[in-house]
Length: 116
Image (cartoon, rainbow, N blue to C red; front, side, top):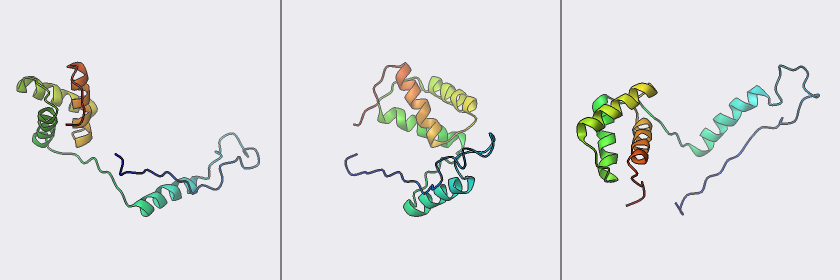
């Protein structure tokens, strides 16, 4: 959207090889700095996106909600069967998995997902 700006920063100071890589197993990035970078971004922006597990009923409600919103016409029994198979093969039920399933379903049914 026009009202969103994304910034990516790095606090890493050692991106160049240390003495041409002291040995082949070490890396050019200080391991401690990788952790510091993640923590600093979290502290700086305070945005956490959680993809929490949900119950089967909640997962199916999300899938049905997406299908209703995007006018994806499919028999409810088929939708439920395919959505549950999708979540089983992905090993998870969450909002992200529901959205990924709906995107795949829309593609197979040639339904364009756009804003309403």
